Image (cartoon, rainbow over all chains, first blue to last red):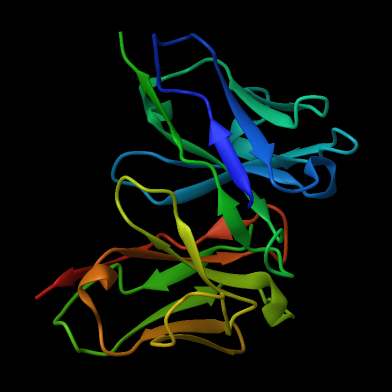
Length: 121
Length: 109
């Protein structure tokens, strides 16, 4: 079955960068966009952007432009999300998610388990 | 961006009650294909409940249902069960950036 397995929790200092991985299995990695969603404490879900694993093409939301980089390694069926210039506002749980593997839709029917990123001096 | 205004932000109900959560889009979503609902239990990843506005994901109990009318979308939960007292989010994928509603917390009265 479809599995998305993310890397472990991270603690970072302000100004640092964090890179989270998302290892996919159970489906053809290059056939479905890989998305990243985060949830900060006390806040709702926030879509950050997506990568086309086949082409490497990306879309990011404006607030993260210049700070986020989504990449992939198709030989490892793994996607990555790197966020730089961390502040305490970036403390959150980060999820990778894939739409439409199980359902014929653009809904996220597969999610990673989440990666906690804590930013603290 | 297509903002989704989800209401209420929280509600209190009892086991067995029926509740409805609504989402209103700031821009027209011309196809119901691009509207979804999720359940989010603290400490777990979100879970898809309904996609394409009204299609129940396989394995999701039939007490959950979704509907659409113009720019308004609704999630109804009939006969609330103990596992249903969590957060719910709507989502649109019609236009980039994809957006979520701000969420509804359903707690026990």
